[in-house]
Image (tube, rainbow, N blue to C red; front, side):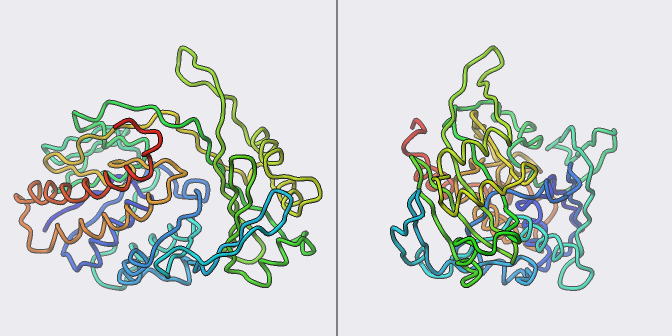
Length: 369
C-alpha cells in the first residue's frame, strides 16, 4: 500500500492530502507541519477563487458552512474622500468568490482529517520541522532526528521551502518589486454608524475598492462584526551588506495606510484608526526564489514550494488547488510504487507550462524574460 508523506500543512498541503483521499486511493498520509496551525499561522490576504476551482472544492466535499465563501456579485469603487466612483459586475465568468484564508484552511483541515467519508483520514503532525529530505530513498528527517519513509513525498511547504532545497537546480533567486502586502481586520462592533459598516450590514457580500495615490485598498466581510482589508504598497529601503534593508512595523504601516487612504472625515479613516496593531499582518519579499526543478525521483513540489506567487498575486491559491486535483489524478489508485517517480514527472510537464503562462501575465511588467 503506497505511503505518501506531505511536507507542509498549509492550503497546498491540505488540498493535496484531501484530493488524494477523495479520489478513493487506498493510501496512508502523513502531513508534517512546522507550525501549530493557529490563526496567525494560517491567516493571509483574501483568496479570490473562480467557479472551476469552487467546483473542485465542492467535489471534494469541503463544507461551505466552514469555509464561508462570499460570492462576488459586484464591485463598488470609491475615491480617497469616500465618493462613489463606479459600481460594476464581479469578475467573469460568474461564480467568483472570496475566502478568508483561515476559514478555507479550517474547512480543508476538517475534511482531510474527518473520521467519516471516502478515503483514509489524514494524520497531521504539527510542530514537526523537517530538516532533510532524500528524494532517492523517499526519506524525510525531522530536526529531532526522526526519520520517516514515503513512497512519494509531496513538498508543499511554501515560500521558504525546505523541500525545494532537496532538488539541485533550485538555488537561484531573482529580484522582486519592492512592495509590502498588508492584511488587517477591524472589529466594527463600536462603529455601527460608520457609512462603510452600514453598507456591509445591509449587503454582507459587498466588495469595495478604495483608491489612493498609486494604491488600492480592498474591503471584504466574511462574518458579522469584522471588516477585512488588503492592500499592497510600494516601499523604499536601502541596500546593505545583508541585502535589502527596510524598517517595517505594524505601527509604521498603519501610519502609512492613514496617509495613503485616510482622507480627513472619510469613513475609511475611522476604521483604519480603529485597527489594532495585533490585527495587522504584512509580507515583504524583495527576493523571489527561482524554481527550475519541480520533481526528482520520489519528491514533487506543489504550491508556493514549486511556483512561489507573491502575496499580491491572486492566482496562487487557485493554482495550489488545481495542482492538487491534477496530482491525485496522476497518482491514481492502480499506480505501482516503482512507477511513482514516472507519474510525478508526468504531472510536472503540463503544470509547469500552465503556471509559466499565468506568471507571465502577472509579471510581464517587471520580470525579465
